[in-house]
Image (cartoon, rainbow, N blue to C red):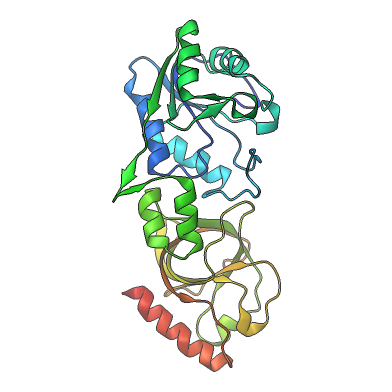
Length: 296
């Protein structure tokens, strides 16, 4: 995939997906997949950098990092992407957007967007208006209707609410992939090693939705292997940790040194809420039970 955000170059005619795509969930992927159905056109995407603050968003809470978003788009087969910061285009009118981006940068012959897509300063124009205006430029617009799964319309807000309430298995089903944390392994207090459960500690990436504090069945991706693991999300109340929330993961049957490595941990299912134990021995006993649960 070629990112033309910082180095705009002429590109061949495209079928371009439009949207913020803060999660690339199953609904978003319906928009992306439509771009591959137009013979002779290169599949492309216009989006915003994931750390962009969009209007009406009090807090940035994405479902995946910008790096993970680019990785998934490349895996899907998108050929070109243009992802500026929102502030650089927020004052464009709808016509500015069509002429300066869709025509001049994306060389779009087909544009694909969701039913709720908005464009222009203040989100003043909708998908139907985009379709009408694009006719003047010889651009076809395909509007993707809502996508439902198990009676639920798949959209980012619903998925984020599931993650915040610990319903991670349901969230993953709507995402179409497992919600993941990716970050550098940092130094911890090494208490886990003294009780037979060595762990890796990772700070949560900026601007990622925070799951419900608690213990999760997880898998850790390590050197091409998918390792069963148990992850505690929270503030480790038993040992008096007082900093930002962490993901603390015990990788089953592994005892290597991973400090400084960047690893991805995927949450699969919620086991129990985070709680404070009266002693380290009580914590050890519960961790042993958590590991048994995670293996089931």
